[in-house]
Amino acid sequence: QSVLTQPPSVSAAPGQKVTISCSGSMSNIGKNYVSWFQQLPGTAPKVLIYDNTRRPSGIPDRFSASKSGTSATLDITGLQTGDEADYYCGSWDSSLTAGVFGGGTKLTVL
Amino acid sequence: QVQLVESGGGVVQPGRSLRLSCATSGFIFSSFAMNWVRQAPGKGLEWVALISYDGSYNYYADSVKGRFTISRDKSKNTVYLQINSLRTEDTALYYCARDNPSSGSIWSFDHWGQGTVVTVSS
Image 1 (spheres, chains in turn brown, green):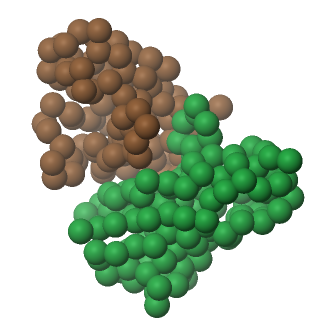
Image 2 (cartoon, helix red, strand yellow):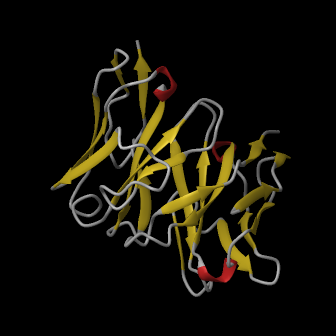
């Protein structure tokens, strides 16, 4: 049981937009920054978003995120087949004094 | 460029110990906090431990507290994860990840290694 809750899977057609949600609580998302990670099959995770909305250099602006209260969302527009991956949200939990991840969302581009 | 290379994994019997290493290069090691994150086969990511840039403080996931110890050696630019009393549920791919210096968070990554596999089995 993950501290952060994500849908197990989402799907959309190429060129479309998909939204992945991440739900937490006051002690994690409510108080701390959220990061989003992409893990392509057989590879190490990669940071897509940090500090709720910021993209590292090299991450296309098709990837964007937001946070409101104790929830966060990752939007991916102009879907490509190469976006098929597992996506994870994560945050620091001030009560646990620990990092916490969501359970991951598998994106299928139909 | 930034490189993180994990090593030390293997097949180990339950109850034994193992020390994982993450050798780093391409940046000023003593300026960055470091983390370990693991991923059990077919499962999601699980954060394991964090050590501050100077080793003065660290944090652990509840699931490993008391059995795992994170440490660092600035002379070797290496971060370690000592794993004691190994359990079958510790079987996972263990990644090290560097703190993101651009972030305002205590917990934010930018670079990840490729991981080292730990298999706990009798």
